[in-house]
Length: 178
Length: 347
Figure 1 (cartoon, each protein chain N blue to C red):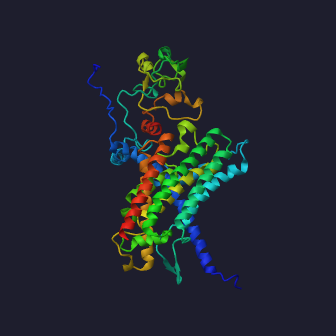
Figure 2: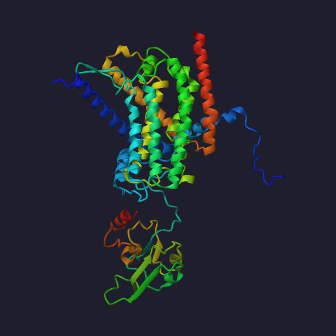
Figure 3: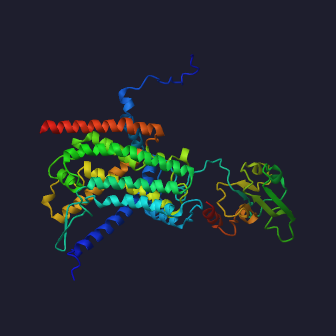
């Protein structure tokens, strides 16, 4: 039969020789192979102590961004929720009151902002949809949790720490999350 | 008061020796399970258990604790007493072998000469055989009492496998006994120490046969047919849980250590450290060196067992029987014949 590629190797169907039928030599050959594996490098990443580097395009947990004055960017327009193919995002808008200008950048803000991490597929479409640079996917992933409820992240979980009020806040948050 | 002319110190000495040997065997067995997992892991490029304690050294304790904490399930339809007896018998039978193994030369303590062997019976090897064949009762009873078809099938397999391979094992041994001329393990080991070659030099084929049969007797891969998961679910311990299951699993490792000790004693000079004259050091130190040597030999054999297990897949059942009856027994007979002829020609 004509071979389609040069990759196929014809199976040797000649009868086994005496030494092959003895089987012992082949067992010893096999044992040498397994023995050589004792000295091979283990590819294991010993997880809690060692961490594998994420690639630069990794899409992990979401963060809600602040502007350079520490005000929340999100205006609760709902475009992320619309873009979300998994329907993981819900939010409630509220109007900014007098005296809250240092908290929210624009007149409308998200009073409630929840992402269900069990639904989320980390596609990053919310990041693309956002007109206000308010939502980003970070380089951490959702840690394990005992309940389903624990996977519904609210605004407190998502909002990036304000570095203007607490200089170490970001490092602290990273230490906890990462 | 003298109650029958009994040497009570002798009884106490033997009792202490029994306790020490059994406990040490169990401790070593604990760590053999750990060793098995580590060896398997290293042969497969993994780190293996490394969470419990430094290097995972507490892992066997965690395993044991876990087994004890598990729910004890005795199936309704099982015959209760036999169901409980099974694992106990398997464990007892495998531990009983250690009675005749000469662990080292005599130790001198408190003005007494203590033999590091529980009993130097002059039919040591016969005793080993008797006990080893009893081990299959544990599996048989356990499998039968479970009232589970798979367990029964697996128990049947275990029994027929043990019977088939015991014949070849015995025949390989007869050839060895022809050269040694004694059944006492102590004498066999002593004969190999005093400037003589180890028995494996005289009986290479016999050793290979004995080793393969020992592997089959221990139900180790490639002969672990009684535990063939793909056709028998879990094998004869299917219905067992908690420490009863642990006993079955443990007995396998005890068996492995015991057969390693027997092989080391019969073919590899037992406690004899090669190229070292034991008479140059104090007898107690020589005994300790001997003990260490035997333990190292046992560890090497156990490693060999594991190494084989993680290399070759298991036989099919007909292949197993073929190998046992059509290859091993004729080979063992041939070996016996050759040995006999050689001995006769030298007379």
